[in-house]
Picture 1 (spheres, rainbow, N blue to C red):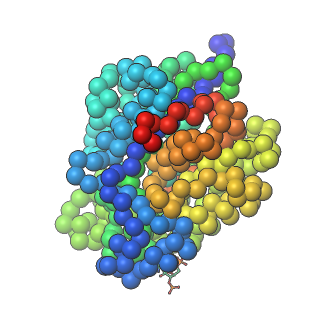
Picture 2 (picture 1 turned 135 degrees about the vertical axis):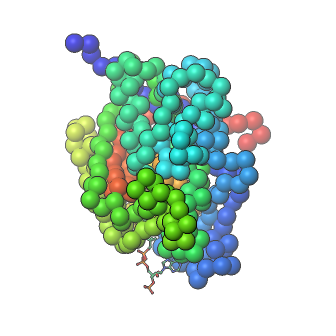
Length: 339
Ligand code: UT7
C-alpha cells in the first residue's frame, strides 16, 4: 500500500468588488439602521459586484493573488475547485470560467456546501494532494450573493456581501492540513434556502412573482443557535482527533456571518477572543468566500506565522458545517509596492 503524502497551504489571496456599500445605504429604503446592523452582527459595510464583475472574475483575481504570493505560475495548477452557491451560470460551472480566465488547461469543478463550501473544498483539495492525484490545487471560495438577495427583506439583505478568496494547496514534507470534520443535516434544508429556480421549482412567472429566486431564512435565531453548537462541536471533535487542546490553537478563522456567533463559539471552545480573527465589519457574510478572504486578511496583516496552528470553521445552509485544522507554513508575503 502506498502511503499518503502531506499537503499544505502555500499561499492565499483574495479579491473584493470595487463597490463598497455601508450600512447607511439600506436606511434609505428599508426600516433598518446602521446601529441595528452593527450591534446585532458586527457588520459595518460589504462589497457588491458591479458591471464586469462576477463570481468567476472575483475568484480568478483571488487565485492570481495567491499564485503570485506563492511564486507559482498558473500553468502549474492541475485542479481548480470553486466553492460557491452563486455560480455565473447554472451550467457550466464557475470553475470553468476561472480556468478559461487563467488561460490554463486542467480539470475544474464547483462544489456547493453553501457557507461551509471552503471547509469542504479544502478537505477535498487536501485529499487529492495527499493521494497523489494532484500536485497543485486551487481551492477558491467565491460569491456574488448580492445577486440573490431580496432587497425588500431586511432580515437577510443586510447580512451578505460579495467577494472571493483562494488557497493554493501543494504537497509538503511536514503535515500542513492536519484534518477536517464535515457535517450535514439535510432535514433542515428549508431553514436557509433559495427555494426557486432549480429543477424542483424551475424559473417561471410564479417563481419570480413569489421572489423564490432569493435567499430566504426561516428563523435567524434558529440558525444562530445551530451555528454556535455546530461549529463549536466540529472544532472540539477535530482538536480531539488531532490530540490537541484549544490552547494549542494560535488563531481561529471562523466563517464571518455574525461577530456574536464567532465569540459564542470561542467561549464554548475556551479560546480567548483575541485569538479569533474577525473581518466581518468590512465584508459582511460572503458565504463560501468568507474563510479564504479572512485567511488572506489575517496572513497579509501579520496575524499568521509559520508554525501557527489555525482552526477554520463554518456553518451554513444545508444545514452544513465543519472545520479544518491547519499548521500554517507560509511566511507572510512582502507588502505590495506602494502599500
Ligand atoms: O452564513 C450562515 C447563515 N446565517 C447566519 O449565520 C445568520 C444567523 N442569525 C443571525 O446572525 C441573527 O439571528 C440575525 C443577525 C439574523 C438577527 O439577529 P437577532 O438578534 O437574532 O434578531 P431577531 O431575528 O431576534 O430579531 C430581533 C428584531 C425583530 O423585531 P421584533 O420582532 O423584536 O419587533 C426583527 O424583526 O429585529 C428585527 N429585525 C431588524 N430590525 C432592524 C430583523 N432584521 C432587522 C433589520 N433592521 N435589518
